[in-house]
Length: 109
Length: 118
Image (cartoon, rainbow over all chains, first blue to last red; front, side, top):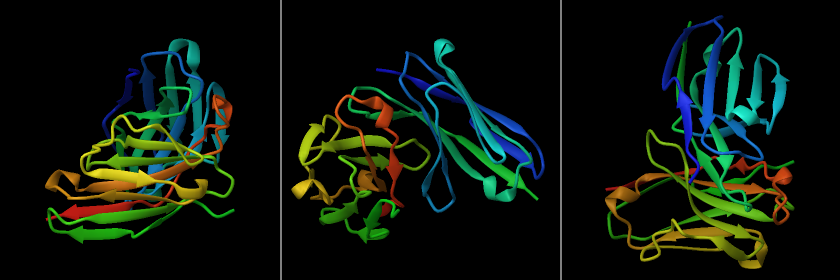
């Protein structure tokens, strides 16, 4: 089945810093989602991004489907950005998602 | 628009007891998913419904887990009997996903049920 790898596994940032999270996938995909799991366990949709670039406030994402990777950019990080960031891709035509292992982000004041 | 609803939020049971979780998807969403998330890992699919039919239950431990989606709306997931290794967060998600149309496959997740088996 399709493999999804995220890097780095852990990231510690000072408030105000910028960072880039990476998601590599082993096969071509029709779409890709980025999620933020907050400390209470809620998975929050960040981006649904099969290809190209999208921006939402301080966050942006780029997917290069032909090269099988996606990047999530966090600018001017805030303590509320702490949590685990997951990327996920569908593995079949019914949309079953394969998640990466996540990147644990801690933003310190 | 209301999101995916789940209950209960937390549950603590003894091993060998039974437990049930409930999910109400976003209105109009045909596809419903149950995922299990063990601490430190990404969610893994247990079962997927398209309307009230099962399209994938290959990862569901059928000797102890069961799920149903009567009338193609709400769903329940049951564990009987529970084992220690079932301690996890159980997440319900839904998507529009007309069959085979991946364009509509953005999935939305509920808050999850955290299960602890003692």
